[in-house]
Amino acid sequence: ILNVEQSPQSLHVQEGDSTNFTCSFPSSNFYALHWYRWETAKSPEALFVMTLNGDEKKKGRISATLNTKEGYSYLYIKGSQPEDSATYLCAFCYSGGGADGLTFGKGTHLIIQP
Amino acid sequence: EAQVTQNPRYLITVTGKKLTVTCSQNMNHEYMSWYRQDPGLGLRQIYYSMNVEVTDKGDVPEGYKVSRKEKRNFPLILESPSPNQTSLYFCASSPTLAYGYTFGSGTRLTVV
Image (tube, rainbow over all chains, first blue to last red; front, side):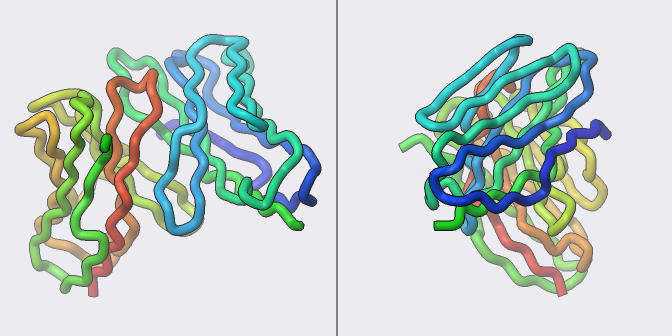
């Protein structure tokens, strides 16, 4: 079982502040790193998929970076809004002779306080 | 509308009574997967399938079976459910793992 760690586990941020959190994954046999946003009572929704070392992706106020050599990815939210409150999941896929599925971290639960 | 459809959304059953949770996608995705979500444990993969008739175990396959006879359908079968299989289950699909998953709306299963 692969180890995908996310930190912090939960985070309270004031509306308007920027924030970031981390996903750590094995640095060998990398295939892809996914980020998902999961709102309460809904299903996870894909934010980004990154496959190359140094990848940076952006969607509105949310962006992500990837370092496959050291095995980490950061998710950044600029100017947090109450609608950003959700659990953010990262998921790692390794290249093991055919992609063997995504292993998810336990998520960072983000609460934006007005 | 492109979607992954799971049924039922909620199910309460008794120990030992066989059940099937259906999953269907209309996006012609090759890759499909089942996960369970438990408090404090995150999403854990049960089984996945890379194409028709190609399935493999994930991290927690015990007590579950799957089949992939057609590209669009990937049912999850519990032959003899037990209370420790009480959980929230998600089906997901993608063209390949270089693309994000599309998740179904989830099935909340309670085994008493």
